[in-house]
Image (cartoon, rainbow, N blue to C red):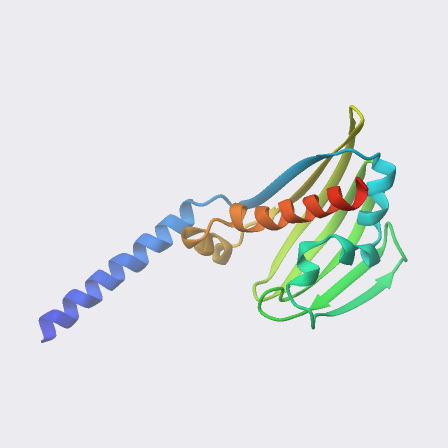
Amino acid sequence: MFEVIVIIAVILAIAIAVVLILAATKPSTLRVQRSVNIKAPAETIFPLINDFHQWGSWSPYENKDPAMKRTFSGAERGKGAVYAWDGDKNVGSGRMEILEVSAPQKIVIKLDFFTPFEGHNTAEFTMLPQGDGTHVTWLMHGPARFVTRLIQVFMNLDNMIGKDFEAGLASLKKLTEK
């Protein structure tokens, strides 16, 4: 019986070591980016991103927890605008602050997650003229802490977060191409 316990302990230790080694090989930065072409001018799209009060009309995260608590502070829109949320396990809690605005081409947002996992990232939206429309890119990047790298051993965060970005960009497209 003791031999069986030792064998199980050794196998478990090896499995844990393999997971830790795999996590250590993951990139130390997280980067998720998606783009879409929208047949609307940047001047139509830009205000929907630059004003956190408008995110309810297009952001995929706004519908994940209907009971989510939202607070707005700082500037009404643009640089200095702040949006904080506190929700269930699907959205957690966090805070966004618009740091930089170059109307109507670029918005840079400081994105802090507090729960379920702490994370500090930057989100960037760029809107570049393209033909009769606008090429819109949603990018999130930041350091990947070791716990994030452990999660990446079991889940593809680019696919998981990227699906949400794609849904949000599709909503922006639908909303602005009317």
